Amino acid sequence: MTNPRSTFAVILPAAGKSSRFAGAASDELAALGLAAPKKKPFQELKGRPVWLRALEPFVNRDDVVQRIIALSPEDMDWFKNKYRANLAFLDLQLIEGGAERADTVERALSSVRADVDFVAVHDAARPLIALEWIDAVFRAAEKYGAAIPATPISSTLKLVAPDGRIVKTVPREGLWAAQTPQVFRRQLLLDAFAHRGDFQPTDEAQLVERLGQPVHVVECSPMNLKITSAEDFRLAQALVDHVPQPGVAKMLHPFEDERWK
Image (cartoon, rainbow, N blue to C red):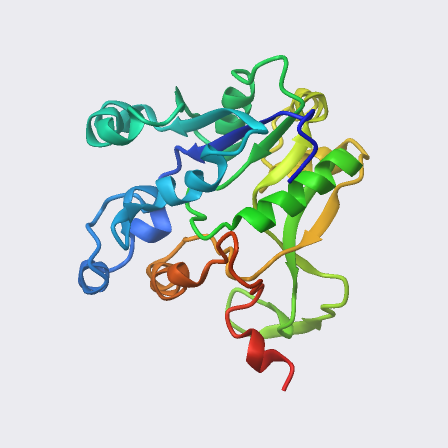
């Protein structure tokens, strides 16, 4: 576990439109047992909503002293009614998000307590997060001030033109796919958003990078996937029972035994 003297707030942005997910064919969603056009954080993943699975590993941590979920205004009343039973047992603060992810996170950040040391931003549609991965990125954030989980790119990368033609092969050396939770010293993240202007980052680390501040990468598992499409949901269904649990042998990769043959 991390140093008990450090405290963390966790922000779950869940105000997005889920346009790619909702755009999937109705019969494809139905084949997965999903309701359309329900947004991806609110879909049931083996009996529990995706957002709840994303939040649960943070709930019983002594170092997490504040949890915030940011919702679209049109979802707020529905969410309170639908998940009334869950909310009764969760110390969870609900706020209205903004038009873009960065707007949503900035609004949530303004609600973080002043006595909190670090802020973790975790995708509400990233439900396969394990306690040991959280521990690793929390420890790195304490050491470096800013840390994110990520996986090295192993596939060959192609730059493709709008007409589908390959322009060139992009060297993959040094390229990593960013994940969440992304964790920052609270004041550092506040400073990053203060210098944001009209810029729309794709993640919070990008804002911190623009300050010239280093962000440390912690190697994580590809299991920590973000649900963006119906295909992602199918993968999550297959992997959800294989997320490492406390006291269970470490398994950073779903096919660990096969990787080194």
